[in-house]
Amino acid sequence: MDTYREIRNTLVHRLELHTGRQGRMDAHLRRQSSELPDDWTERASEIGNEEVLVQLDDAGRAEIEAMRAAIDRIDNDAYGVCDECSEPIPLARLQAFPLAVRCVECETWEEKFGS
Image 1 (cartoon, rainbow, N blue to C red):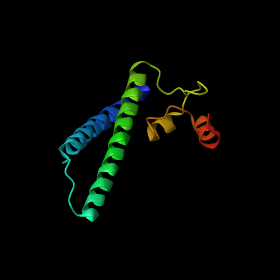
Image 2 (cartoon, rainbow, N blue to C red):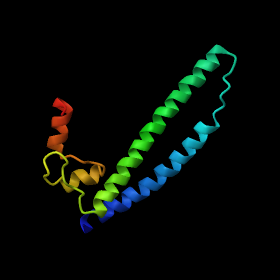
Image 3 (cartoon, one colour):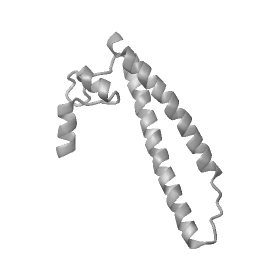
Image 4 (tube, rainbow, N blue to C red):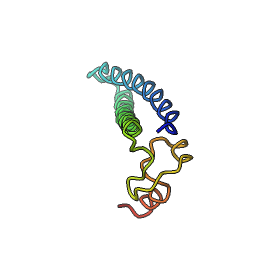
């Protein structure tokens, strides 16, 4: 749908940026030496830093996956429909949060009560 073309262009641009960042993070994690410093304080710091990087890596992969899914939904004319109630998701919500898969009402329900 032409209404979503600008959203798609934004998502493609964000996907390119995130994919590049993810590649750099992956390279950094692969470079991490398996040898830890002898100093226990430095060792704890290194382990803590690596744990944070792994969490950021996981979050980055999830966001990339969500962007690809949104682009696919746009390309297949399935974008902008709530996964829960099948009602249209307002354009303003999609412009503010292009990865949205639920309308505000269903998202609020999910946050309050779960599935």
